[in-house]
Each structure stands twice: as C-alpha cells, then as structure tokens.
Length: 441
Image (cartoon, rainbow, N blue to C red; front, side, top):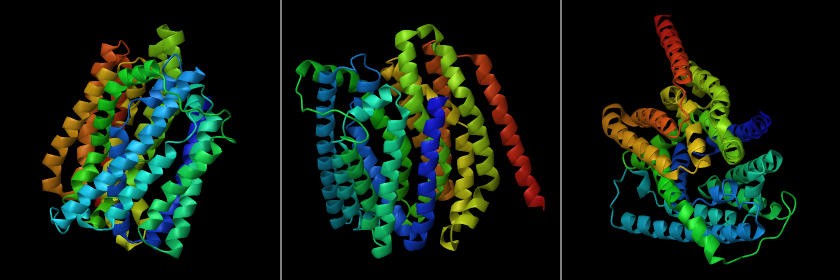
C-alpha cells in the first residue's frame, strides 16, 4: 500500500503536468502535429521493444541483482541497446523516406508527411541518451525504493514538458514535440549519477553474465515484440487509413482514455513486480493471496474509471478542448469498455515474477490475434472508432487467456473472478441506463 500510494502520487503529478501541457499544446499546435507525434511515437516504441532483452527483469527478478559486477555487465548491455535503437531509428527514417519518394503511401496517409522524417531520428536520439542512465535506477526498483523511482519519473516529465511548451510557444512546429523527450532524458541521466543514486558504472564485459542475460531474455524479447504490436499496432494501422488530423483526434482520446491503464501499469511495474518477485524467492506459499490482495484495489479502480468514461467522455472533451477536437468525444467514451479489463493487467507481473516468460508470450500472442481480428472487423465498418473497439476485443481475449495462465501456475481463484464479473455487469448496466436516460431527455 505504501508503494502503491507513492507511485500513484507520482503518476498523478505526471498526469497533472501532462494534462496541463495538453491543454496548452492543443491551443498552440494543430491536430496534424499531434497526429505526427502519435505515429512517430509508435514507430519509436516499436524500436525500443524490438531491442528489449529483459534488462529490467535481469536486475529486479534475477537473484544476482545486488552483485555490482553483474549490474555493470547489464549496464553495458543497456548502453549498447540505446545505440542499437538510435541506429534502427535512422534506418527506419531512411525506409520511410524511400517509400515517400516512390509514393508508396496514400496521399492522405500520415506516413506521407515529410515532417515524419524529423520526428523518428530525434526520438531515436532520445533513447540513445536514456540508455546511458545509471543502472542504480533499476536497482532502486528492485529494492522498492519508491522515492527514487517516482522522483526520476516526475523530473523527466516536468523538464520534458516544460521544454516542449517553451519551444512550441517560440516555434509551433514539429521540433517542439521532440524537445520534451530529449530534454527529460538528458536531465535524468545527469541526475542519476549524483542526486538520484550513488555509485559509478563501469563498462564490463563478462561473457558468462552476458549469456545469462541473453538466455533469460529470449522469451521476453518475443513477448516485447508482441507487446508492441498489441499496444501500438492500432496506431500504425490507422495511420495507413486516415490522415494526420484524424490520428490527432484518436491520440487525444487515447491519451485521456488510457490514463487509468497507464497508472495501473506503473503500479504493477514499480510495486507489484518487485513485490511478487521477492515473495516468490522468500515465501511462495503466500503468492496467490498476495496477487489477489494487490488486484482488489485495481478492480474497484477499473469499474470506477469505466463508468466515468462511459458517462462523461464526450462532456470532458467539450469542456477541455476547443471545437477542433470535439469529434474525439465518442472515441473517449468508447475507451470506457476497455477500462473494465484493466483488472487483468497484474497477471503479466505475476508471470514475470515466476519466470514464466514463455506463458506470457503465449498470452500476448493471443492478444495480438484479437487486435488483428478487431481491426479487420470494426475499422472498415465503423471508421476510426473501430480502433478503440479492436483494443477492447484484444483485452477481452487477453482476459480469457489470463484465466488460463493463472490456472496453469496455480494462482486462479474462480470465486474472486466471478465476483469481479458481477461488478462489471453492474457498471455496464448502470452506464447503459444512464445513456438511455440522457437520450430520452
């Protein structure tokens, strides 16, 4: 509870900063710029996950996470990974440029915008900078030093957002959106070697440790690729069918609609994963009770978030944004159904804590299949809002496979699962009745 409270406070501060910056930036920048950043961010996210070999898990979950020589080896791999991401970003930029040159994209596609060639390499440079952070930040997560972890998050958010707003005010162009990641990462790197953590890092080449990290991370790499496809393929696919302005509206709705999911992911990663990893090492008999005790609060948060989005989504958009963005209202309401499935997100941390990376890969593959089917079914018939429904179908498939995965590792409690389904039924019914009442008025 201490860790969740600390993490939630940090995340809420980040939300406040992001929320305020969004209100400012939507008045300084046109929707097409927001759409370009959505596409560029999705491509950069792909490059990050495609190079993920489980370095975070190698520190938090591995029994040798407190060994200085081992951490130095992992840090060297982290630095090399940052270089690889930057090189991949340059390669992706070249591929997009050649395809634009040969008119491979539809003229209405966001991929045909030449400004995308600026966004991709600059975001890759931001990851190169981030790769040089002290590995002691990850060790702070292992030790559940929430103050250090949350401080780094807030500092990155505040400095990056400030840089973006100042640049957008001086020059409202695409460069302003890239200034934030570059500045935020640079500041955290500098602070990670003095104020946030202590200790010096050394580039250490230990073949045995390198092999251990690579072996443990092979399934995580596959799982990370699938995670990207599940979380970003909707944007990549929609960018090929809609222009940058439509993508900007989708991005605004997703930013607000996924705030709750981001908070749950953050709590799961910073608190639940290290906690379950420690329980698995020290007291595996209590793991099932710990898992459901941690999930109880997430269940209530999920249904409350869902009700707010379903009931007030369109009103929130009308109040907060100027008329150019009002079409995002129905999109935001659609994210309400997706919020009901947040309760199953902790399952991923449980599998990671137990070292069941292969099982997690299977679950993510099932989610990807659900997303692909949803995009194929919903988008041609419903337009861009079909992308939200595709995400919901993907999460629903993931929930079914979560039951399978939990049963496989002996953590499934059907009584608690049925109780949550009852809460889902009550919230869904109340939302439908409220909407019918509003229409009758």
